[in-house]
Length: 291
Image 1 (spheres, rainbow, N blue to C red):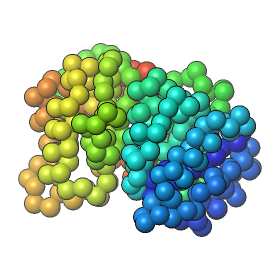
Image 2: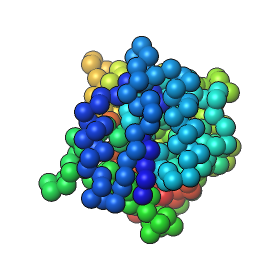
Image 3: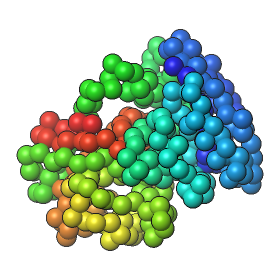
């Protein structure tokens, strides 16, 4: 398997990128670094034109099987006006700032993988005897033809009364809440055009901002198509003197709109960030979420 590593967002750190590249051959993977992977333009990994060129080249190259984003940060939304159907040629892997790319692919009818960025996979959440993270190994499994048609199980627990229905099905969308909201009100905003399940996470944001962002999102989509929200890892989001927990704040607004709310702390910026497909159909049952 050949994977192209691109940097659509902020400048990457060379050392963890090169380390991850060196660890993949034993897993049957060759990681190829894009032309402008180490470029710098202000705080970005190159100009918009350089980042678009690398992304398009990877999408159109016949020998590349998948594309892995090197880092998040900021800047991926700058690429949205230049994207076209070539974006759907193969899976793109990433999270955080890459959320806008993943959901753009999903809304075009494609599929992407919400998972750790490339510069994390050899330095974070490593198995005891493994040179890459458990999450990265699961990414490789999802890309394998053996797993292509097998739904994967993710544990979730019902939080509110609306979440006690027997089965919920919908298109899997979501990712970083702040990043999603940054494009609401633009032509590339998240749109729920069919029954959907929204998985949300964030990092470092105070509760009042997250509440405001949640309301912005709920008020800017077709709420009738939102069948459930999965509350992920809101990592290092300071509670300060707020008397309610963040999940209680989310539940208050979900109750207002009769949205089933579930908890699944296995994805986000924390220690675990299990990969899952965005754009695929998911099914929520008493046993958990299947994607």
